[in-house]
Length: 180
Image 1 (spheres, rainbow, N blue to C red):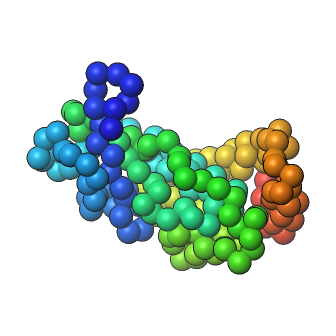
Image 2: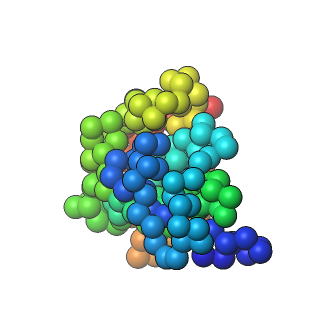
């Protein structure tokens, strides 16, 4: 998959539970420029990768993306084997459009329901990946605050206006942070 420059990256999909060890069980999509690329995959900044993944998972929970299954969290592997998280794609506030869709698509601290996941669950999940608890707490809260402050600035189509009020109700019920 071209990245816009001369380098080509291969899009890989994280399989199973979202975790750093899952990088060892990547499913390759597309042609691999080097047959042992997956074996050479590494990240020069594992903590940065965990942080990016935590922010993506937190964002998907907060916006009610009930289609955020593990195959929607992808990594890019450069020719030299360096790994980075791909930008978020295929994200929609599905749960806020239809409350029947509440699943996370993967397990977060033993839970799979968006409406049952709280700040502590996100923190516990990422600490199981190896991130420190204080850093995880700050990252989750910061991500939630950024999403919350952005929601009011996003124009919604008239048929989707209930998204904002549904998000607000869940935010209050879950006691998610709104601002520092």
